[in-house]
Length: 454
Image 1 (cartoon, rainbow, N blue to C red):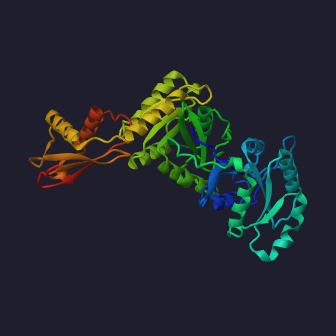
Image 2 (cartoon, rainbow, N blue to C red; image 1 turned 90 degrees about the horizontal axis):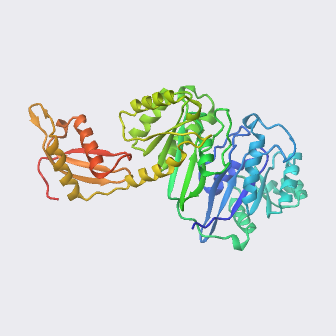
Image 3 (cartoon, helix red, strand yellow; image 1 turned 180 degrees about the vertical axis):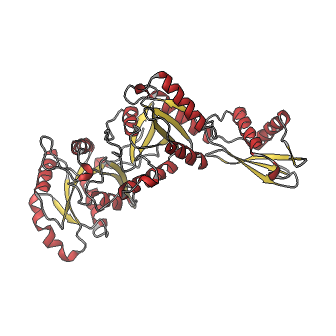
């Protein structure tokens, strides 16, 4: 059973620097930061690690402009229309938090919304510190901190951008946690799954439906998700982490810098995940952008499956035609499974996690060299390589070089005489013999003029 780390939540109005502070504390640029207010919408979790001391979770949240009952002020353009969703996400994080860090802007001074949020946090009854951000040095600390003492919390001046007082902040945050909350670092999750796809394909809805949590903000507005957000959950004794990512559009259509950051983070997440779930919108069919994403994943030999979401909104005949179109686009990687699902009705959702685990297990397959060469003899006897320029390539032996994905090296007398069609035949045969149905596979040909002892 995994031990949950104690958590501290960053709370504040928009553009006080919570995401920059979050990145500084976890020592990684995971959260998108921008001068524009309202960039963060969903909450993000990261681990603050300290030498020889217990680690703890830090939770970044969107800028709050509402209380639980009425609007205080309309949010900036980036979060307009999402104010109540952001508040709900923050409230959910507060319910699980062990302490609170109220972040304010030292340059702006104490604003009415800061006082309102401080009162709300005070009612929660959690240990709290007020972090006065954007204080670049000790020379102006007393002047910039003076009015924030009226909030009644311990106050510390920092600069998330320049690193001023960050070490002291980590110690102060850790001191907020009760000794009973200290826990060992949880083991890595059994499976890390990245959602990838065009905007508004329903990635966040699928994560909420599968994990059983209202963890991601869902909206009909395309591009709601910006950061790549980790959602951890357990199912049947197994742990998973879903990585929700921003929708990926064609680069020529991206004119906004925040969206550019989001797309880059989405692509990066697919390379770090163990399995990628490429999500399509059944109501829009298969686009060239979907084809580009398939090509990218296949070229990188990323383990992935295709989810055709919103199948409840499309007639059965149209779904069959859509699956046929997807199959044609996957002709270059026919091992990739296609699953029709609906986040709304739950159709097909129970297939996703077992299938992801199967792909992951296939990626880790290790086949002994002797067994591989007996299989190669059987494959060659069934269908010899073709004659190229009046000479037939001679295969010497086969070995497995790597796993994740399974990578095989064939030693032949002249690799240039083996056409790609025969390499595909070898791949199909190896998949059938060793039960590698859905994992990607690499087969390299290496020229060698003699048969080596193995």
